Image 1 (cartoon, rainbow, N blue to C red):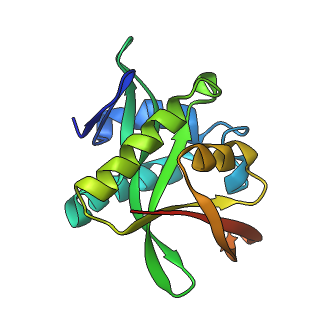
Image 2: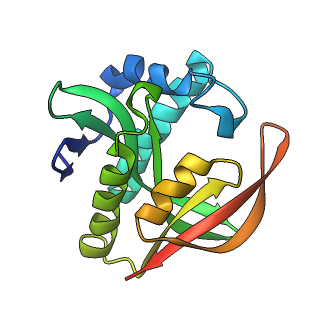
Length: 169
């Protein structure tokens, strides 16, 4: 276990999490900010990328487990992300749509912010969010972040404006 909150715990993902990850990454509504659901191959690449991040950075997107049921309901964690020619430390989150609007993303994101400041000793952490993703923007605001700049990311052949929400230690 990496992090523990009132209702959740976060741990490294492993290959056994593939089915739970598919429930998230293969849902069209969940993945609207990514221009659509992922194929099995893309889900596997995503999972492999997280596992390699744990080895490289000692962090990545972690499995979010609901204590009450032991079910993986989402992923939340820290990643290094490209931003305007540099790399920034980001809190990212993606949850199974069945668990939206229950405060789980905010609870997990706040724990990741604390981890970034207290364990990694980061001076700042951000969330990079597509400008149409209101729900994720609201999580960032509840996590104490404010928009500091905007950038167009190119993904799946689409120009996507993204805002960078930041909080400093």
